[in-house]
Image 1 (spheres, one colour):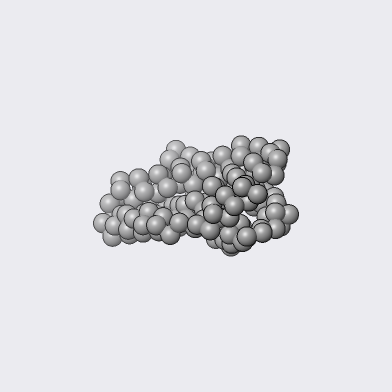
Image 2 (cartoon, rainbow, N blue to C red):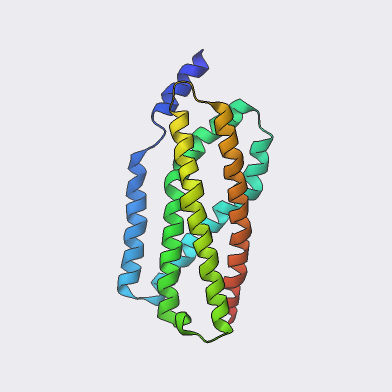
Length: 193
């Protein structure tokens, strides 16, 4: 019974709203980079957020996902209790910052006016970033919220959480594949269109 009491105490404070300060800071830095129209600063924000977003997606989808599938339920629950509240704030922020900074960077560098076939690379990047963002905000974020809310209950439905997490990790793996594709596209941008 001690485990259940400890679980309830931890679950009661799963969502730590003080993390919103980091979200606000990241959005403020992005807004500053856009407002200054400094290509180096805009590129730095885009690349830094993109590296974090891509790295975390790849780690979650191809490293942590397979490990979680083989953990016993208490270990999986303990990891989920620590992971999901952080992902709730981190991943949406990184996707918004990466996409926003990338759009304004492309605009500043003139990529939005390129002729065909060079514009095909821009369109591919925009399609992938749109898919990543929609999937992140429309699938992964709501799953994070549902898992956090379920874990805060005194008797969470662990079967339901397991089903959600299975879909969550499949979505993260799909994001990992799209992240590899966006890396290839960004490498083409750097090498020259």
